[in-house]
Length: 162
Ligand code: COA
Image 1 (tube, rainbow, N blue to C red):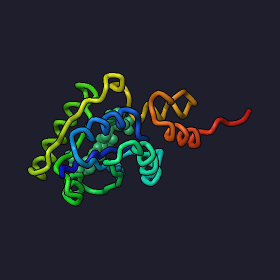
Image 2 (tube, rainbow, N blue to C red; image 1 turned 180 degrees about the vertical axis):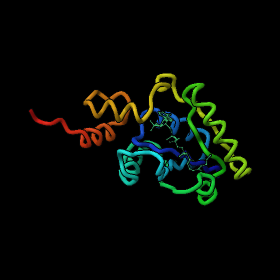
Image 3 (cartoon, rainbow, N blue to C red; image 1 turned 45 degrees about the vertical axis):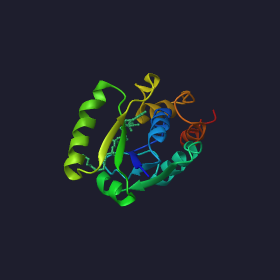
């Protein structure tokens, strides 16, 4: 039984993240998408809201679970019995950061591998900040996030009646 975790901020989950999960479920028996309780980032959605959006977005994948973690990602991987950490690599610009993080995580836990997966090229420019900005100005996010996330973004940024 090969289990991996896919950690991230997921504020909110995008179609790019879903694309990575779709690839990971082909390779591993169980994928745990795990929300980082990350105090260094200013977040739009609470951890509970991000978990809810992830659960909705992962409904088509029976081998995916969703949870959250605080502290070190390798400690969480160990706690749930994961053999590795999935990360997405969208462009060369992601590489240095991911490489550094992978080597540090290996130093901390040599038995936990980092697996870098590339999403479809159509998601190379996508991130959660762009989605949040677009939604804040009532732009169309339907091509970038699952329908439930689009609904939640509309609730966060309601159009004021004139
Ligand atoms: N599609 C679309 N966007 C993607 C994506 C994909 N496939 N993959 C990543 N992104 C975006 C995210 O939306 C996010 O966008 P944002 O910055 O605009 O919000 C950005 O890329 C960063 O990705 P994310 O996966 O959320 O990484 P992060 O750098 O915020 O957090 C953690 C990474 C949580 C895994 C890391 O900080 C961590 O492990 N923290 C715990 C502490 C620890 O163990 N530290 C030691 C490691 S050295």
